[in-house]
Length: 122
Figure 1 (spheres, rainbow, N blue to C red):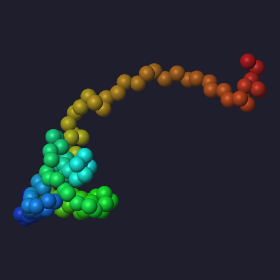
Figure 2 (figure 1 turned 180 degrees about the horizontal axis):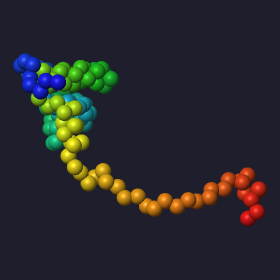
Figure 3 (figure 1 turned 45 degrees about the vertical axis):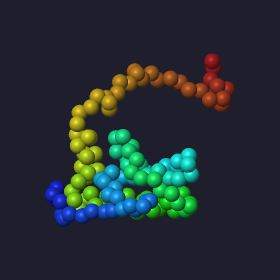
């Protein structure tokens, strides 16, 4: 698979008044207490990208955001940036003690139900 970028692309979104570049991170929708919607980048800081003052239903807004997130993913694929699958492969290859588990010794126990208790001598 190619690791270099295919071409140069960019996307712009308009949530309020100006067209803005959403960046390389997926976006998330959150309800604000002032009856408007806040668009967050799903980066380490969950930074605010924009406010979205609209009367549309949440389901419609989530559909719009899903399309925008698809555009961001395609943009990243074309530009060769923020390859989520490659990042996941690198994280898996790193040694980590988080996945190492210690289990208690196994003991075989005899589980008796109500019917088996009737037929047992104990």
